[in-house]
Length: 232
Image (cartoon, rainbow, N blue to C red; front, top):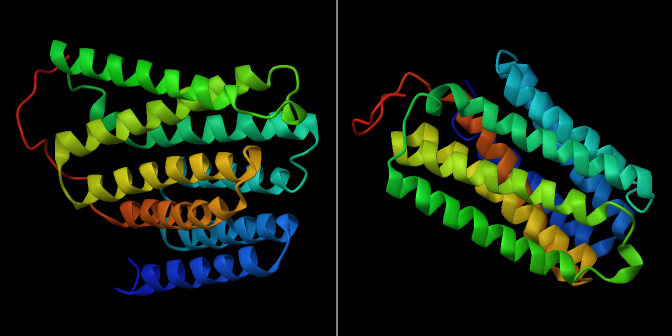
């Protein structure tokens, strides 16, 4: 367990440092700022919560993708970066999968989830269509769709987790998942659509997201559903 204000202080320092780097330095240094932030959070996670192996693996994959991000303009490295983030998000789903796998959704819930998933895929299609031609390469669209699907799956799993348990533990996991997805959307707009101001919310959401996941790992998982649901 961490001291009460340890994680908020770490988050605040990392956010301020990254805001400064975004304001004062070029894209390469901005990427180093993200890499440094992920590295610090991974060290904190291993220091106190090394037993959370699945979560540690996910953050480690994000760290490796941040290393590759330094050469993101290389087509091969770009592809591998996408792949690592896809695996990182799927790994995050497996963090909570044991707690949601045995709970059965109603027909209405299944329909709602299917509609939400389909709508998000449609929005993803529109975003991909907006990518300037200079960034395009073979399989980019395919990787975008798989990446987007992994993001949507993570969000749906996190929201299900929150609805089932509705406690502090589920709140921090859901907050972490949503912040990571918001960060990626902001990053997409900043890099591919060249609205560089979006690097500010990108980095803010990213740091809050990974810190929230660390906070989640410190909390008890011995919780029960807030309502009865049918078992599979």
